[in-house]
Image (cartoon, rainbow, N blue to C red; front, top):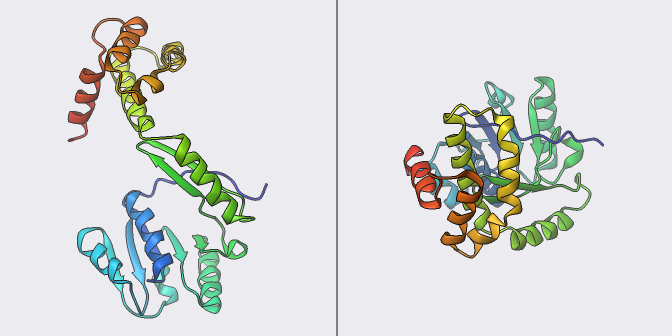
Length: 226
C-alpha cells in the first residue's frame, strides 16, 4: 500500500492553492470548510473565488506562481492545466518537505485527496489510490444515498451523551457498553423517523433519568454557540 490514510487538522494553517479556475475553486472550498487560511495564486481567478474572498479567510494574488510562495505554508495544492508548472510546484514542495497535491496527477503528489461525504461530524472518505476517480465518484454517490442527515444528528446526540457522562467523572472505557446499547437499540433509525418518544425511551432505558433528546441537543447547541 503506497498511501498512509490520515485525517489532517488544518484549522488556521496556511495553505496554498495554485490555480484560480474551477478545479482551484473546489479545492479552496474544501480547505475553507476545514478552517484553513488559504492563499490563491493565479493570473486569472474565477468570479466565484473573488466573491468567496470577501467573506472568508482567502488571500488572492493575481500573478504567476513563484517558488517563494511556499514560504510558511503547511501544504500546497496545484490546480492548473500547465504540466510544467505542476511539475515545478511538486519539485519545489519536495525540496522543503512540504505536503503537496497536484490535481489529477497522483504520480507527482505526496498525498492524494479522497472523495468526501460529510454528515455533520461524520466524515466518510473514498479512495482508489488514484487508479479510478470515476469509481470513487460512484462509491461517493452510493454512500451519500445510504448515509443521510440523521447521522449528523446521531453524532451530535452521542457527543452530548459522552460529554455529560465525562462530566460525572465516568471513566471513558466504562461508556463503551452504553454506547453499544444505544447503537444496537436502533437509535439512528429513531432519529431518521423523527420519533422523539422512541429516542427518549431508549435513552432512559440505557442511561436513566436526565437524558432526553431535546435536553441533550439543546445543551450541546448552546455550548457551541448555536
